[in-house]
Amino acid sequence: MTGHEAGDGHRFLQSAGKLIAFHRDDRLMTVGEPAADVLLIGQGLVKIVLPDADGGYPVAGVAGPGDLLGEMGAVHARPRTASVVALSGGHGWRVQAEVFRDMQERAAVRDLLNETWRKRQENFDDRQVAQSRGVRTRVAMHLLKWAKHFGRATDSGRQVDGLTQLDIAGVVAASQKQVESALSQLRNAGLIRTGRRTFAVVDAEGLQEVIRGNRPDH
Image (cartoon, rainbow, N blue to C red; front, side):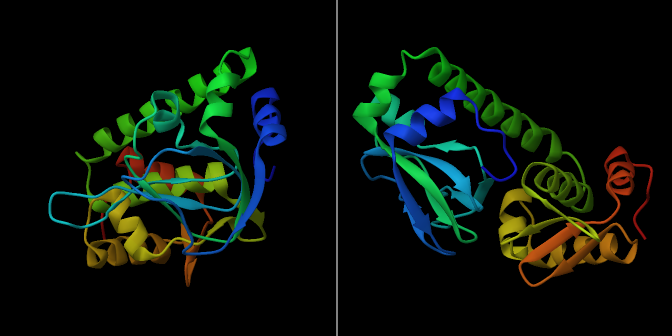
């Protein structure tokens, strides 16, 4: 499992699930549909999309290798509360909801569930804290986190593929123009490198300085 050391819980789900491949823009789960299964990501990135009161579908988060999705609906037999769309090609395992519910009694699967919920709460808390910060700081926080969790090592830093400026804007709750400006500042400062649907963190400590507020806007 790229970028993630598989534990017993992951291995149990892999053995019980159906291996599927996905491509960019594939819709892997749809809000409102019955939670017929859970999805364990093996490789690739996906975005979690929530409907809002204005009829839009902002990006609420990004998930990648080792992440478990759709478990709340499966556990409680409720419709999906979010959509999941692939940001890149990859693969994962679908486990039928009834099979997953039966597996909950296994200690390793329960540990995976607890870790999934812990990470989700941590991400929610991070987003809440980030909302009090400027757009550039919010962008820096998320780029650094994504590079740490999902990035692959390259000669110019840890690179993450698949995210557009619009995707980033949804996560940080800013306009695409604001995100474009923030990325430009970070790029001009030599902290990141960007390309079409890709970025690399060149200077992680420099991004930390931005997050700490030790690098003023230029």
